[in-house]
Image (cartoon, rainbow, N blue to C red; front, side, top):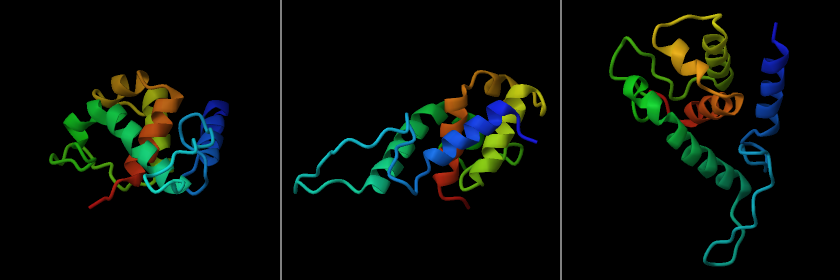
Amino acid sequence: MLTKAAFQLKALISACSLSGVLLLSGCAEPETATSASSEPLDPVAAAQQELLSKGRIRAASCAACHGPQGISNNPMYPSLAGQDENHLLQSMLAYRSGEKVNALMSPQARSLSDQDIALLAAYYAALPGQ
């Protein structure tokens, strides 16, 4: 059963999905950026690029254990690249709430906002897995 906060976060992620024309950050319509040929950027490609850019920055502290591209070199730590977005989201929420406990992940997750968790889950899900 989802808590109210988890339900709201799930609704936010759905509203900001990459399949639509909305950007993950703020769910605002993308600006009408144009390429050198004055053609509008593909909104889905722009959203994907925005996700990867913001996710890469926010995931910097995750790279020490989970690898710079979300693929861990240490069997102690799971690879996150290509995993199901909802699974990643629920796992991080569980670490943050204390439902799941891990000496390394619990303190990391407690410092994450709902927006950080949504961004990281979407980012790692978008990366190619092994």
